[in-house]
Image (cartoon, rainbow, N blue to C red; front, side, top):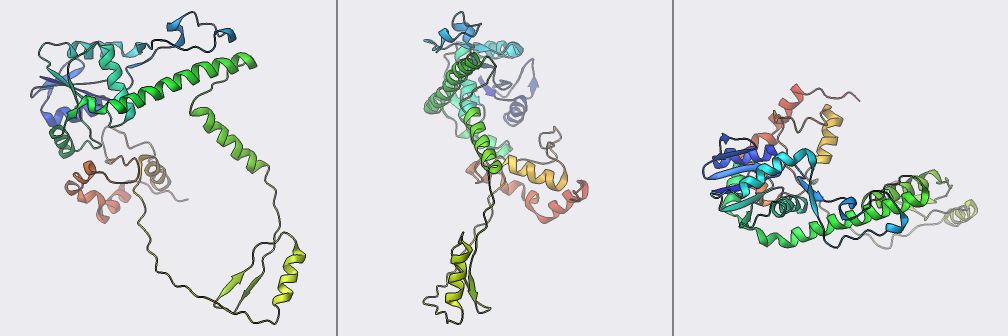
Length: 332
């Protein structure tokens, strides 16, 4: 018996349907030699500062807070599901686990936190797929890899989580104490806000400057001078050119090709769909009216290529016409 652990219930259900785990239990599915359960997102996470000492009150003299041994805790609202996973991991008939969380750094961390918190020592394998199509899931189970092959990915995710903790806890408390006001500081949040503020200030402080450009041409070709901030300089150049003949010293012809636009990622697809059809948040509905392929970088990986032959209609002109009949198009 193998225990498959997904990140979300919907993903677990899709996997269970493919591998034959059709019998529903309390918090998991069973069948076909598999148990399939889920983490409901982040079941476990790094403990708050109060777990490492008397740090409930924010004091300047306590900083920096640097845990010697890091602890993980279970989210209070998810303890029941964690107990389900823990019991499944320690079942005598479960010989190995399959990590089926999202194929990425964060998904790896979600599984490892639960695996370690449950005190599990059984071997585990990694299911690395980016599509929930049946063919992609079957292919993924055929190509399972040893879970420890992804230890570097886990270590990078753990490093990022600890960096978030150290900067967030210490910097937030420091600035809040110094300025006597709660000021949230984060590894990503604060630099991003800084960029926004700098850009906003640049827009607010922008002052229009008039500049002058001299153009010459014969109706077919045109040449332009660099911009001049002083009108007198541009006027001088114009007078120097009046009545003179311009000589073309070189002509270069180039044939260029333009690449097709990159594929939509989920964010740009939602933005475009909302602009055209007012359906920005309807992609995750249970009915799955529209199938979403998650292209993280605008490119098609091998997992998606396996799915395309099975759904050519989704990319056809008739499909887009049919979609336009059922979805109201915006008039603006």
